[in-house]
Image (cartoon, rainbow, N blue to C red; front, side, top):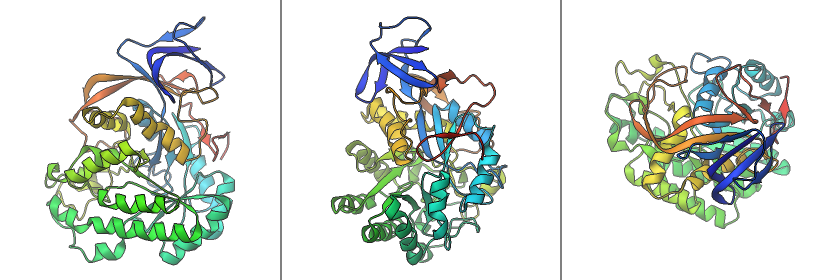
Length: 441
């Protein structure tokens, strides 16, 4: 099979090309006219992209499958041009904090996934002895919280626990990714209550992110371990991260489409579909995050898709203190980011790097993240100038702040391992660390 286009986003830039595929892998990338046999040519208004990789997705199955689930989450991913997701170790029950729990998670996913799925493990108090066995069993790294996670089965690490986890991971170059908000800083802030978004924002101040990131950086400096900051909302933390890197600390950082799309003063009071932690901050933070993506201070963009059932969002009363915190947006990740990028002069090739190559590298999935020989033939036909209004989505639950929003960029076709996804039986694979597939839990 050959897929060709006049615009193909390759690792070296955008150009006309033909992508040759056999046995699920890319075997050659040639000139547009260097083709014979079974050829698919994209429309003039379409660009051929590598499948996106989303390394931050809360699937919630088993245990809270009514919140999302592997079937609905991976259909939504496929519809949005995301051909690989990495599932978070919470909010499933059990959380992925032991080898046995990982087997339960894989058994739940087997046969249901429309795209390829890898798994994070969890680092919680008392499971440091499980981290290396979980790595051996195939997780790509470990997620931890530095404050209450919101679910009792996934408690946070204190400073001693953080050091213990990093000391265990450093000798094997394991990766720890951290939700960075500081419990004490938040405890000293006003309690969130009622319909006021400004009140909710005040309850989780920027200093909470900065204090927690400083704790993570200090622990990484002592242990020389690899760490990663998830879902950065506070642009004021960027100087701290830049200094840490200059000092040799191995720290990377991501942000999310909702922090790049929305701003606090645009959030309607009572609309708890916008509630997430850390919160959507003022427009100045949004614009500084865009600048950091352009200059490399922020490494990648992923969804942090964290849905729940509509009742938990408490839209009936609009109380930000009572509502579950999490944004549902997996399916619209690419058009949401591209809509913001194109207005700021960020090229599509950079968006692809941030949303495909960079998350694939973070998760250690070498056959993902680009159109190049030897990579999996995960491809997306994307119409970058087409517009659409966000309506019904493949997500299990309909609550999303993107509802009714006009976005630029439409995913028209998706290939996974060289086979076009057409709504048929799920063909995704479960991936181990390193990208190899397994056929059983």
